[in-house]
Amino acid sequence: MTNRPQRQPSRPRVAPALVLASILALTGALAGCGPAATRADDAGALGSVSDHLDDASSAVATAELAVRARAAGRLPAVTADAAVGDAVETATGAVHGIGTLVVAAEEAEQVREEALSAASAAVGPVAAARTWLGQPPSPADDVLRALDDASGGLDDASGAVEQAAARAEARASARTERTAP
Image (cartoon, rainbow, N blue to C red; front, side):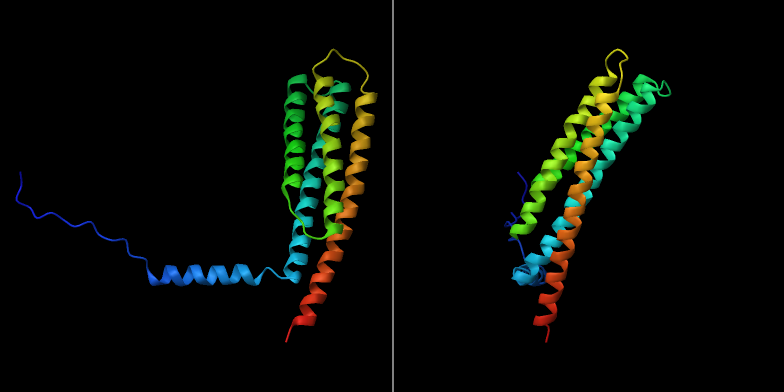
């Protein structure tokens, strides 16, 4: 046994700067909870919905290009399958991204739901393109038609989201101007 004196466990010390930073962060979070913040948040959320719709549109376009190139014999099956496999993941990710966004205003929620529906509808045709690529060669007309329909639905949803985001942003700006000293 050693003759060293036993140390007392030290108490954790909370730095005053950490306490102050926590208080300021909480105050800042609470300050952003008013109606104008909700409208601004809706505009930001709708911007994210628009980004996810762009991802879904990109996935549909990738699948369409791969199917066209494979049908024409200009793209090996393995390469086309890899491209469309990634497109399926992108389209599915877009659906997940839109589905997890929260908006406060009723109009923004309706537009988000329409965008979610369009993105969800695009996943099937992209997955069908991958299935078509794995089968013996056959006409691609039905697959391409379904991809074109999905693309049109995504374009319509994107237009509606952009308009709703612009309206939400304008309302948030007007509210901020009225409440500014």
